[in-house]
Image (tube, rainbow, N blue to C red; front, side):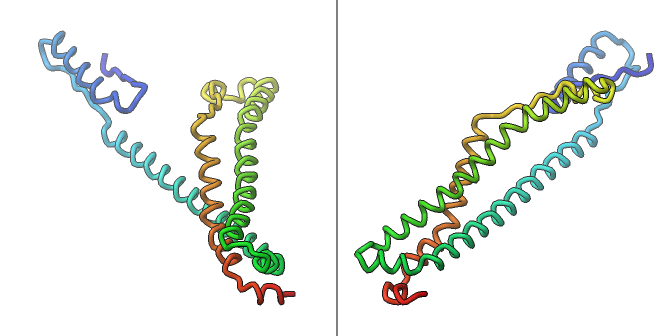
Length: 195
């Protein structure tokens, strides 16, 4: 035998497995006519690639949240501009600034919660859609799917649903504060004159 290749399930187990193999070889071989080679550089490169991929995903998600937040802020600023007269009437009738801020923040939360809920529902529907497409392809041409694709099953972690809704609401509140404050600090007299 000139070579034996050992494969482990987890990258973290590589060093420990190599040490166990080396210990066993020393125990059963009087001469050292073997070498245990661990492709550490390939493992390090795989780890670096995974880290870079995770960072890239975080950056893309951050940019998406920023763009979405700016869109929410623009919608709410347009709403404030359209309802300037209404804000003036409410302020003239005795509504406090905190009432106006609360009203616009509530509208922002409803807007972002409905968007977040739509996103979660879409995410939940991806699993059954994937399973249906996989089954359709497998029935049409079984050899078209590799075994690894056939064994894939989408899973949804409950914490990810809660986290995504929380982030959606957080972005809405964060980007809704400025339009709400702008509405609350409008001068009632000027707001009533607005056409």
